[in-house]
Length: 431
Image 1: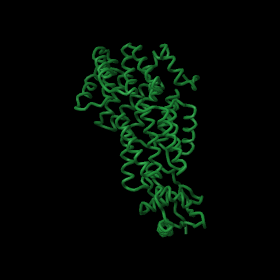
Image 2: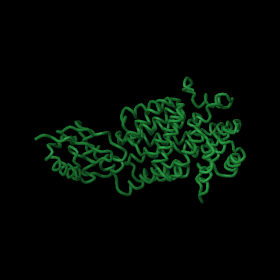
Image 3: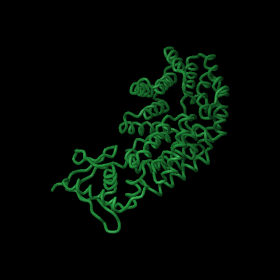
Image 4: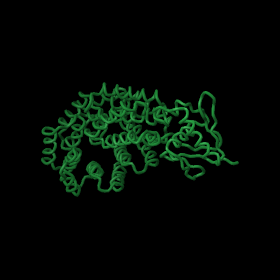
């Protein structure tokens, strides 16, 4: 009997010769692991960690899942062999299975665990200090309750990196916490997607770029077709002054995940950093068109327009951003930058002064006002904000220093020169 070619889609659903297989979630998880490890033997411990997410797994429950899979695969000419004292392996057929995705791994959990994990990731994806802080709380609780659920460890490390970026948590202890969580996840299940990329992200936020480069290289070796890994690797390239290479990685990521707004936003930024302003503006337009009505997308497009091709017609929509009942902090950053680029000096300074003096602003948020200040010629004030971020080890500073808005003045300012040398001390040849 000819055997069928088994594949898994990005969500972990199996197909045989293009026809979907109707399997229960547990059997899908078991089959995914067998496919990913074929022709190697999968141990009972690995099944317990991956398909049972660290919860108690009896030999009988695993045997029942294997039995159901054997019945489903037999008509396809596929068999599952028992290896005495070790585990099981899949035999027969050709596989074109991709590496396990985050979604595949994450769904191998109870509904309550999965809901908590997805909610925390959605919060972290907002990338505001308040949302990131809440995500950290939820993930710490989830890990305490489900220590074997390794995707939560990766998500916590990424959220901690974002919090370090904003300057809302101390750098060294937060990096150490994140690395310990990742080490634990590595011990429990080294196949967990995103481990190496999350490690690289943490190290980037601590300005340990050489160590981060090693982690990102490992991530690329194990998941060269993973959009999340490509995104964090591209950020590392932007931190380290390799914008052209970042553009290539982000274009690959977009081919894999074409409807992810953050990818297009980062690509737009990378293109501008690489000196391709018109292309960067086109990507910002595309991001806005694909996400109509989203405040963040509108604000991002206006900021890019102000940077690349400022014109009077962007002033009115920039003001409209601030008309809501609960204006997000990033709106004031964008509005002040738009006004500064249009030469509306007094209006821009009023917003900057009100925000920095009268509101609760993290160190990371404050660095974003260096761009409008620099556009107004207030480079000493801009340098003071960046120096404060350095003094507090605010991880976001690594990206802010690469902002094209600072390219003309920063290398020529005494504080700017010192910051570039200090933050990129292991990368002096690229500064």
